[in-house]
Image 1 (cartoon, rainbow, N blue to C red):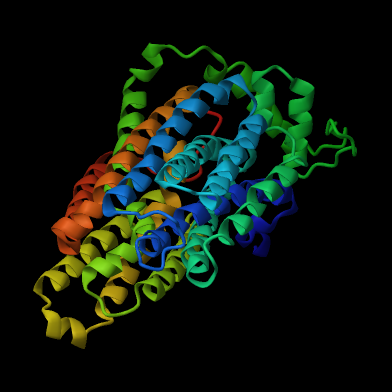
Image 2 (image 1 turned 180 degrees about the vertical axis):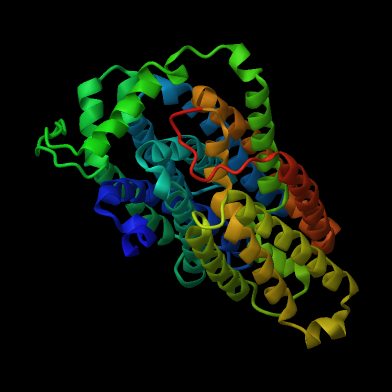
Amino acid sequence: MLENKLTIFRKQYRMQILGALTFQIMNFAHGFGTGWLSPIVQIIQSPETPLSFPVTVEHISWIGSMFGFGFLSGNILFAVTINRFRRKFNLYILAFPHMIFWILAYFAENIDYLYVARFLAGVTGGGLFVIGPIFQSEILNKNIRGAIMSLGMLFLSGGTVMGFILPTVLNYHVIPCIALLFPIVFLIALYFFPETPQSLLKSNNLTEAKAAFDFYNGVGTEKSPSFRSSVNASEPVQNEFEELSTNILKGDSSQSVTMDDFLTKSALKAFANGTVLCILYQLSGCFAFLNYMTSIFAASGSVMDPYFCTNIVGITHIIGCCIATVLAEHIGRRALLFFSTIGMAVSMFIFGVFLQLADTRLMEMYYWAPLVFMMIVIFFTASGLFGSFYTILVEVLPVKIRTLALPMEMTIFSLLVVIILKIFPYLLFELGVSTTMYSSATICVVTTIYLYIFLPETKGKSMDAE
C-alpha cells in the first residue's frame, strides 16, 4: 500500500526522473534569464545604471518583445529539426543561444546588444517548450508524467526567483558569469543519457531502442556506451516495450502525416483546445507578470520596496508550483487548471478594484495590500495554469500529429508572447495596473468557460496511442 502511494520513488522510475531532472537544468537556466529582466528593467533605467547608455520605456518594450520574436524563431527552428534530428541533438542545440545571450548581456555597449541577447534567450525558450515536453513525455511513465512535468515548472519558477533576487544583491556583470554555469553543466550531464526509445524506433534502431527503454525503466544493462540491454528484463517491461514498438512501428504514429490528419474532428478539437490554452496562458498575464513584476509594484503606487516585493512574490510562485506538483496526479488536470484560473480571475478583479478606489491616504494605510494581492494572484497562477500548461498541451494533442502540431501551437504561443511583452509596459504605465488586472481577469473568465466545456481530462493518457 505504501509503495502504491509513493509511486514516484519506485526504482523503475529512477533513470526517468534523473533524465527529466537533467533537462530541468536548462529549464532552471531559462527561468533565471526570464526573472533577471524584472529587476533589471528598473535598474538600467535608474540614475545608478551599470550600463554606459540610456534605456527608455520604449527600449524596455522592445527588449521584452525581442524575446517573443526569438521565441517564435525558436519554435520554427525546432519545428524543422525535431523530426530531422534525434531528441538529444535538439537538446544540445538549446544551450548555445542561451550562452551567447549572457555573453552579450555582459559585454553590452549599446541597446542593440540587449535586443540580440533577449532574442537569443527567446530562441532557447522556444526550443525548450517544443523539445522539452516531447522529450519528457517519451521517457516518463504515465504514472509519474504529470508530477514530474509539473515539477519542471517548479524548476522554471525557482530559476525565475533566482533571477529576481541576484540582480538586487550582486553587480550587474557578475550575473552572466554565474548564469553561464548552468548550460555548461547541462551539456555535460546530458551526455550520460541515451536517446529516447521512441526516437530510436522511428529511425528503425530496434536494438538501441530496446536498450534505451531498459535503461529508462531500471532494467539491468551492460555497462557499455551503446547501452545494450540485458536478457534478464522483466516480463512486464518486455510487454510494455512490445506495445510501444507496435504503436510506433505499426501504428498511426509511424505513418506519414497528411493535411487530412489535421482536419479530423478530434484533431481540430485538440488544436482548438491547445490554442485557447495558449491564449489563456499569455493574455492572462501568467508570463508577463514574471517579466514585469518589479514594474507592477512601481506602477501600483505601493510605498514598499518593489525589489523586496518582487522577491516575496517569487517565493510565493515556488510554493504554488510545489502544490501543482503534488496535486497533478491526484485531482486531475482539469480540476487543477480551473482551480487556478478561477482564483486568478477573482483575485485580479479584486486587486484592480482596490487600486481604482484607493487614494493616497488609503494606500498609505494599507501599504501592504498590493503585495498581498499580487501574492494571491501569483499563487493561483503557479498552482495550476503555470504548473500544468505544458503537460496538458502535449497530452491533449493526438500522437500522430503531435510532433508537428506542438510546434504549430507554440508558434501561436510565441506570437502572443511578442504581443503581450510589447504592450504590457504601456498597459502598466499608460492605462494603469487596474485596467491591466481587469483585462487579464476577463481573459481568464472567457477562456475558462470554453475549456470547461471542451477540454477533456488527460490524466493517465498513454502518450504512444490515440
